[in-house]
Amino acid sequence: AKMIEFSRKECMATPFSTGYLLWMVVLWEEYLRYV
Image (tube, rainbow, N blue to C red):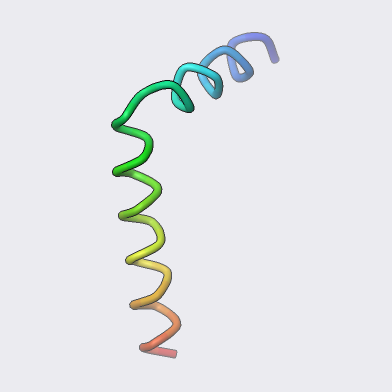
């Protein structure tokens, strides 16, 4: 559980996670549009 919490905090700190979240939102909107 500690490793998951640590990686989660580290992901929050990295700018890469922001791009990843943005990509997930784009995919989700495309999915909703398709359905």
